[in-house]
Image (cartoon, rainbow, N blue to C red; front, top):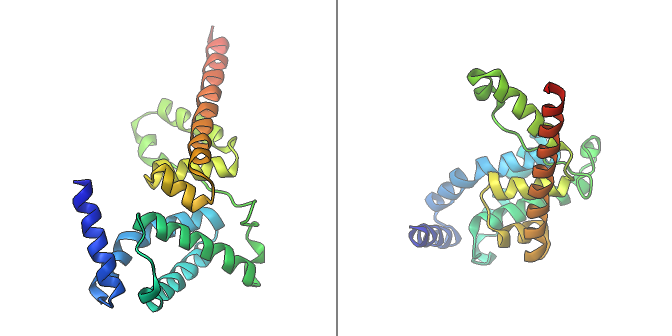
Length: 196
């Protein structure tokens, strides 16, 4: 199944490169939502993220003939869009109000809390604790977790996007999960001590 999906994506990419507008529309529909979501999390300014993404896709269309054929289209687009955000942030005067993206960018990992609130209050409390523990991670750790579990990217793709080596991407995700587990156990022990 994965091979046929990859083959379909490759055919779509090649058709797009040759000027097929329908193929471009397919790429746009497939990747725009997740790229927009990622951009919003990086810059915390939905208008800026959307403007950059629209310009990104316009440039993608205009430069299509000179583009390489990536191993992973999603990782290629995420990495390229991320670079575009960095570049536009530096060039854009009105964007000075947004937090510094280079080292100070902040990836917000969110879960659909509303749906869990309906289930029961215990789950709500658990999610609040999880959110607190996620906030204790570094920004790069949150970004790595977001890319791995929300965007469902492989470690090679994460390393390409974040401009780190493969081993560092694995370590970043592993250490983040280890820290979350550790904090979760400490919270559980504290909770048990308070009720006993």
